[in-house]
Amino acid sequence: MSGSTRVNERTRARVLAVLDEVNYTPHAVARAMKVGRTDSVGVFMSRITSPFHAALLDAIGRRLAAEGLQMILWNLEHDPHELAQRVIRQRLVDGFLFTSATFTSRSDKAAVAAGVPAVLLHRGVTGLDCDQVVGDNYRGAWDVGRYVLEAGHTKIGLVSAPLEVSTAAEREYGFRTALRKGGHPAREPDIVRGAFTHSAAHGAIRELLARPVPPTAVFAITDLLAHGVVDGARSVGARVPDDVWVCGFDNVEMSSWEAYDLTTVNQPIEELVDTGVKLLKRRMADRDARPRTVRIPCELVVRGSTANTALPEPVTPPRRPRNLGTMKR
Image 1: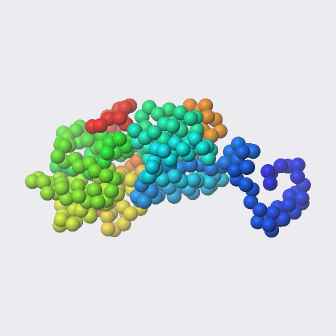
Image 2: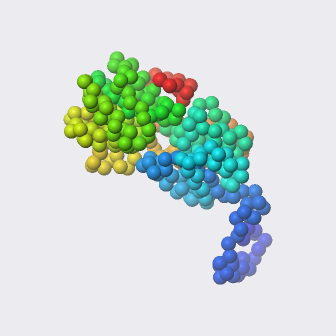
Image 3: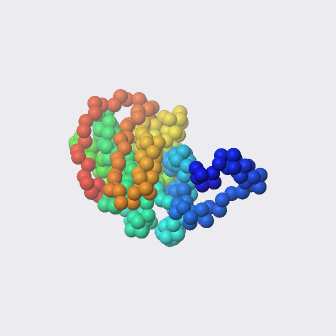
C-alpha cells in the first residue's frame, strides 16, 4: 500500500484484491500523522455563487485533482475570521489558497505568521510576505478607459465597489488614470460604489441615467455588475449600446451570451489557477522559498455592448504605483 519496491508484485496484487473485497480504506488521519502530510489543500472563498468565483472554484478543483490533491472548501461568507483562524491552527491540510483576501482580512495574515504554506489567488494584499497570483487589473481597466475615450465618449460612468478589495482598487485606479490622461477625468457624481451584486449595479445605472446629463458609456468593475448595469438600463428604456455603452471585467461565460454580448476584460482563470497551484506546491516542498508575486496579463474582448467597435492601437500606460493596493483614489 505504501508503494514499497520490496514487496513481490504477486503478493501485492493478492493483498490489494482482498482489501478491495472487504472495502478497506486507510484511515486518513492516521496516515497523515505517519507520513506528515494530508494530500489536501484548503481553499478559502467568499461569494461562491457569483459567476466568476464559481468558475474559479471549478478550475481549482480540476487542477488540484490532476495533481492528486484533495480540495477542502471553506466559505468565508459566514463567521470568516474565527473560522479561518481555527482551521489554520488545526493544520487539517498541507496548504491554503486564499481567493477572497482584503486589505483588512486577518486569515491570510494568520496563515503567513504561522508559517503555513499559502498563496493568495485572484486578490492580492500589498506588502504581505507570501506568494500571490493576480490578474493585471490596473492595465486591463486602463485599456477600457482608453477604449471608450478613443471611441469619442466624454461623459463616462463608473460602477465600482468597496476599495478594501485589491481588484476594485486597482481597476478603479487604472480606469480613472486613463480618463485623466485622456483629458476627461472621472467626476465623483459619475461614480457609484456599492456591493458586488447584480441588484446594486441595477440601482446604480438607474441612478446614473436619471442625471440631467447621463453617461454615454459605463464601466462596471466586474461582469456581474456589468450584467446588472445592462439589465438596469433596459428596465428604464435605455438601449445598449445605442444609448449607453457597457463594459465589464472578468469575461465569465455568461458575458458571451446573446442577452449580454458584453465587452469585457478577460481574466485568464486557468492560467491564474495553474500558476497558483504550482507556487503552492513549491511552497509546500520548500517553506523557505522566496515569495513571488505573479501578475497575469488581461486582454480586452470587444463585443456588441460597445457596438463591436474596434480597439485602438495599444499604448503603454503609466507605470503602476507600487502601493496601488492601498490607494483609495
